[in-house]
Image 1 (cartoon, helix red, strand yellow):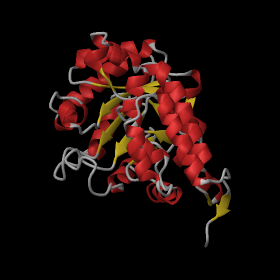
Image 2 (cartoon, one colour):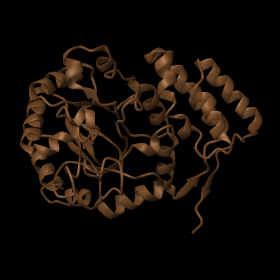
Image 3 (cartoon, helix red, strand yellow):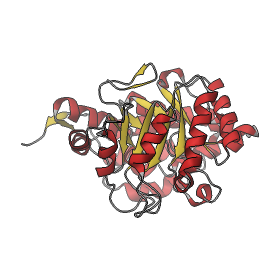
Image 4 (cartoon, one colour):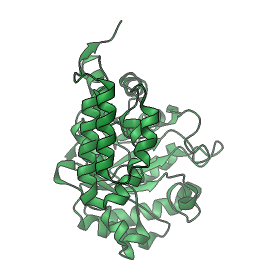
Length: 337
């Protein structure tokens, strides 16, 4: 059973991958309720924590029901990352996660995220310094390498383990790929099956169903899986994958009633958390996920993204429901063999 430090993660943990402006606490709680075993915050800028920027510090908050939860930090300066880790530790998470994989240009250009894949010695120094500075377990999330010619993750993983990390999560793409193309899990499997590796190895990339999760588990032997884009606006993905892994059953999609109730819950949690304006803005990218597969939703989405208040959002959804006649039921059904 994989652990991060002394924290048991379950037999085969499903981990909510950190995503900026998506995996805030209100959404993490919903994913937890649907079966996510481990949650990680949005990535937090080390510079922002050191300068006590409110937006950065607000990302350190989490609810008790989110545990086990990790705070992910990123930055380009070793000393700043150490200070950021100290700020993160003070928030009381179960572990601290170092982001060495974010491919976004504005972060990479400043030397953070996946930029460290171009300077492995600095990545290792930074990791060693953070590990020494905290009593919490430290984990790393990274990628296969900088580009196709520099897929160095097998050696990187060994060096990070030697630096003292408690687990590693690997996205099966290079920085150059961004999120395009197909995730390559072959090297993730090589890391996991490297006899030198003693820490948990988690895989990430293109897992969007129970069968896909099972294939990655069986083929590459990973200790758990991170779910990223498949969870955006669709927390039910965790319930669906767990049901498949445990019973080889496919769940019917969530009913319209349940989808609307989840949006309501998300709104009710998010407004006190970050205010109505920010909530309305960030919910725009989630509506397509929340109502994935519901016929006729596209036109209603245009109304939702221009809604002026959460009350208007709920009124629009009420009107959509009245005209849709959706069933309340969620019925597990066996997969046809």
